[in-house]
Amino acid sequence: MECKVQQPVQQFQDQAEYQALMEGLERSKFHKALILPLIERNTEKIVEIGCGNGVVLDLLAHNFRKSQITGIDLDPVMCDAARKRCLDNVDVLLTGATHLPLADESVDVVIYCSTIHEIYSHGGPHEVDNSLSEAVRVLKPGGSIIIRDTVKPAPEKVRVNFKKDWTRKRFRTFIKDYKVMPARYRQLSDGAVQVELDYFFEYLTKYFYEVGWHKEMDEIYGYFTKEEFRDKLAQHGLKVAKMHSYLLPFFEEKWSKDFSMDAPFPESTVIIKAVKGQ
Ligand SMILES: C[S@@+](CC[C@H](N)C(=O)[O-])C[C@H]1O[C@@H](n2cnc3c(N)ncnc32)[C@H](O)[C@@H]1O
Image 1: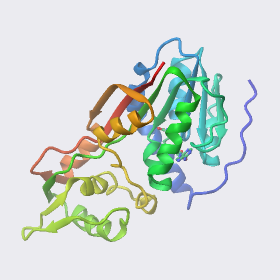
Image 2: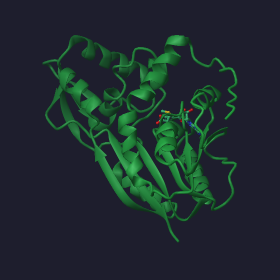
Image 3: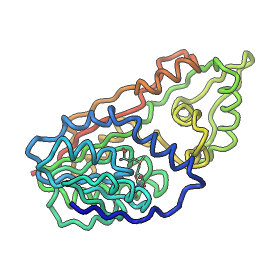
């Protein structure tokens, strides 16, 4: 099959930023594969919203060879990176999550893998609603939405000890740079802090970024708790069939080297399958 790829449009500060982002997406491929068992073998049409450089498209193409798969992304650099994979049964479309160029009730499965937190961060909660409405419009009755993303911890105040000097300093930088939510912490005399877990979760999921720090400072990872996901999906007529949440080993390994807390580390990730009524 001929595979045409446009030249990437340079939207990144430099090549290092582009490279780091691509490698970051690839690194969690094994964990993204956890969504595959949620998809039925004979599925005809699968759409991934926010396909990035095509890591999930690659998994889908190799595991569902008979399915027709569409990746959509609003970033032309990402679309080009995804197209470069030249996957036989995959189309990649440059478009946003709220305007899918797809017919009503034409899709069996819509996937959002690490995408809703970006829609929420850059478009706000209404944009998440607009995207879910659009996903429901294109879904066949009985079709499903699969979400894999970060998850907001339930409200809790925790005491945190910084095991390394740089992570303590980094927290000061985070307090200064992160404007998405108000800082909610109290400095304790022994160098530890008492902090609201949902605020600290934002730090925990970002503190290790060297390249791309400024981008991370615009994003919120803990936008919905598990209950809020359930409620939001119900508002769109979607019934949760499966929900599984856990702490990604990548985070657990890092966090346990860098911090100790008087409570277990929060779960980082949720995987949800929700079904549209017949
Ligand atoms: C963190 S990446 C995840 C990529 C891929 N799903 C994966 O898991 O490897 C999120 C992607 O969503 C895309 N994105 C964010 N907001 C979007 C929107 N409103 N419409 C379409 N794509 C969007 C971004 O351009 C980015 O490529």
